[in-house]
Amino acid sequence: MVLKSLTGNHAVALAVKMARVNVVAAYPITPQTTIVEKLAEYIDGGELDAVMIRVESEHSALAAAYGSALAGARAFTATSSHGLLYMYEWVNWVSRARVPLVMAVVTRTMGPPWNIWTDHSDYYEQRDTGWIQGFAMDAQEAFDMTLQAFKISEDPRVFLPAMVGLDAFILSHTSMPVEVPEQELVDEWLGARTQGFVIDGSEALIHGALSPPEYTEGFIEDVGKAMEEAVEVVREVDHSFGRTFGRSHGGLVELYKCSDAKYHIVLMGAWAGDAMEAVDALREQGYSIGVVRVRYTRPFPGEELYKALSSSKGVIVVERGVSFGSMGPVFLDLAGNMLKYSRKLPYMRNVIAGVGGVNVTYKDFEYIAKETINYLESGEEPSVIAWYHAR
Amino acid sequence: MSKLIRVVKSHHRIPIAKPSIGVSGKTGTWRWIKPVVDLSKCTKCYQCEIYCPDNSILVEPLKGAIVNYDYCKGCGICAEVCPAKAINMVEEEQHGS
Picture 1 (cartoon, helix red, strand yellow):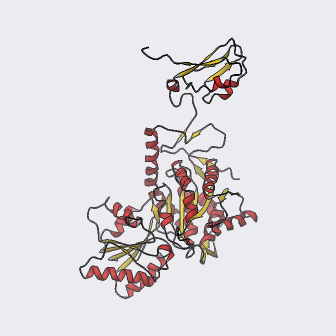
Picture 2 (picture 1 turned 180 degrees about the vertical axis):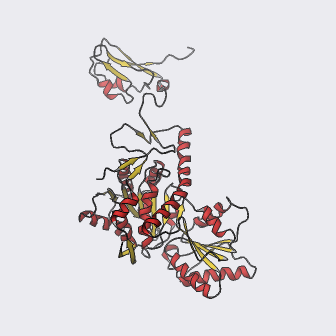
Picture 3 (picture 1 turned 90 degrees about the vertical axis):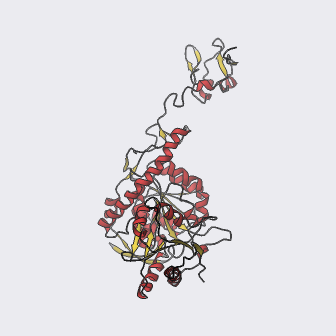
């Protein structure tokens, strides 16, 4: 194990290199990131024995990665905001084809107006596509989650593509010391690529041809079943990663100071670190509060969240994005999933903040938490959905 | 590139199939006109066999072009490409008429 100072993007690139991918397909200009730039350097310098397919659009980038994966290659691509939107057709195709591959999504606000800062709306929009969706908090987790994404995606119980989300700039372009394991250990842990079928010319196969509705229904139903089975696979992979490399992130969710907490902040992404700092400060002021950090939005950790939040006195879901005309996607998923376990739900509110890349600090989380708790303790309920404007 | 790939059959239903004759059923029932070959004119040039999108017309070297009416959809491409004009598209007999 060595310690390297890496940006979030370079942590992802290093993990992809250590997963020994065979193919990287990417569109090289904006909104591409330094992830594929670094991978190109690795390939050029002979450090990574892979093919870089330089395509003419993101739509082709995912198509090329998919084609390579069909043929048995461990394949990777990365994108962001409008690039992700441009490949949307393939995003859906790859998962329904049940082909394992990994894509990093550096989350950025969509235009107009043009914007290069983080929010989660590009990532949220992928939630019905059938991809495993993880979201990292820091560069170390971006590294670990990328390696884990290959393992989860290639598990025969899953065979779905996996997405690793990380916030633009506040994670993608900031550095921290990252523990990098030995290559031999990664090889042993990750193992050979596994997939459900290979189209390499050795056998005649028909893939994706017209199929009657009754068959198609079955294929789609089983994407859902794979997603349900992925819940256990994500937990297992986190455990085995922890046993091998000494770091475990908690599976589908990370709980911070939750064991005795009366109130809870639920969120995902880099700003979870700020929320944890706010919780430290609030605890010193006597507030009983913890952070529930959502690590995976697909499969959605309904069971974990129910266990963590069912006896909460107040749940504050803070989100960098909103489903227009409704509420934040994590809030909606949370409320719906809680109903699977109980009709009686705790008080929950949805605070939309940091949209468009507005900087939200620990002081903002402190304010949001105090406002909510003070309302609730005085017997009043604050509005269930609210926009918070950090300045 | 690494050749270390393990293929493990999924226990889920996935959209993959092996090609076989009549995988979509007897598509000949879709037909309303059918190709009829005049074997006395057929030169066994194989154009019909090459162009047939459904592999439903095969040239037997001694006899000439033979249509598989179980799967021929009656698209008429064989008649169109036949240089000897040995294939005519004929309306299917209507039931009850």
